[in-house]
Length: 77
Ligand SMILES: [Zn+2]
Image (cartoon, rainbow, N blue to C red; front, side):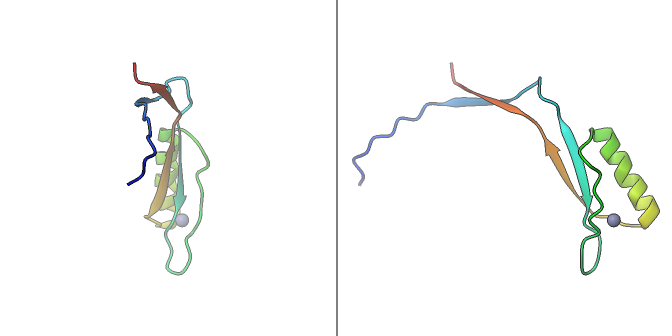
């Protein structure tokens, strides 16, 4: 039994409304290696459109999507 005392302060984490949200998608279709086509960081609508167009052009159907936001962490009041 450790005699060390830890004090934990409760924190609240929230999405920062002033931070810019971004989405991206990379095509992971392919048998031996992923296609690797990348949408770039963009907004949600553009990322969805990019995937639809990539599927239309290549018949690739599998993507890894990333969503990025900003958060703030503050001690609980
Ligand atoms: Zn692809």
